[in-house]
Image (cartoon, rainbow, N blue to C red; front, side, top):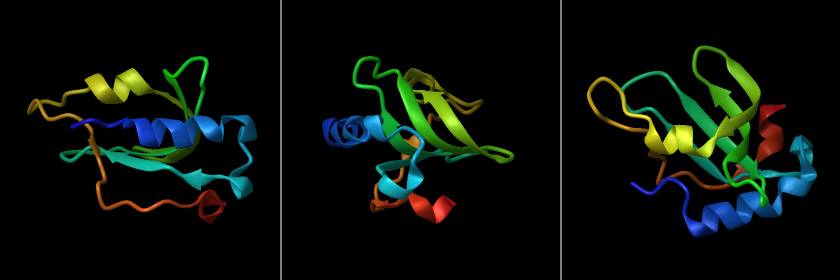
Length: 98
């Protein structure tokens, strides 16, 4: 599965200048581990370094901060299953996480 489509990256990069201001951003995509813990909500992505993503990560506790695009794309769990993108996810204002 392609996690980061052109549309997702374009939207995430367009919000990069907003930094950590959740009130002005939308959650662009939701990624999850289908066989274990881990959910990532993407808010923005650095246009100069697309590897740098920023959002909310919930594995065993919820944290706001950066995560790596390639870490999500290359992860495979014990069963060889990688991270998935929630195909039914619809953009939502990031302020719901406040």
